[in-house]
Length: 162
Image (cartoon, rainbow, N blue to C red; front, top):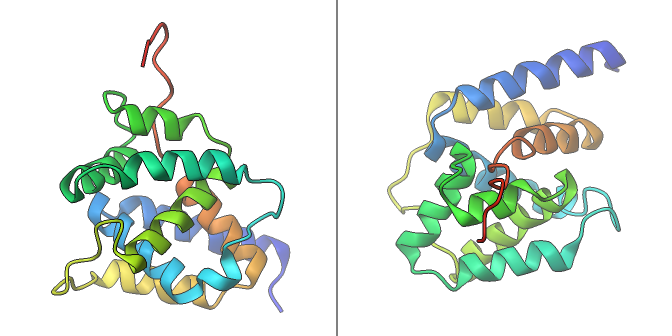
C-alpha cells in the first residue's frame, strides 16, 4: 500500500514527466490514457464537470477541418493565447477539461475528430508515463490527469470580443 506522501510524490514526478513531453506527445499520451482506461477515468467527478460546456467546446472543434482540429488541440496544449478554442478551454473548470478531453477521445474513436496517425510510435517517455499511470490507483490516476490538463489552455484576453 502506498502512503499518501508516496502517492503525491509519484503524481508530482509523473506530472513533471508529462510536462517534459512535446506537445504532440502530450496529446498522444492523453489519447492513450483515455483509450486504455477511459471507462474508469471518465466520470472524474460526476456532477462536478459541466458536460454541456465541454460538449459545446467539443462541437466547435468537431466542426473544424481535421487539420484545424489538430491545431486547436495543439494550441490548447501550448496554452496559445492567440487561439480562441485555447482561450475558451482555459476558462473551464478542471473537471470540465477532463470531460472535454474524454469527448475528444470518443470523437477520435468515432472518426469525427482527427485520429492518431497509423504509423505513430510513442516515445519512451510517453510509454513510461503510460506505464506509471496504469500502476496508480483510480484516485491517483484522476489527480494525474487533472493536473495534466488543468494548466492547458490560455486565459481569456482582457477586453477580448471573441
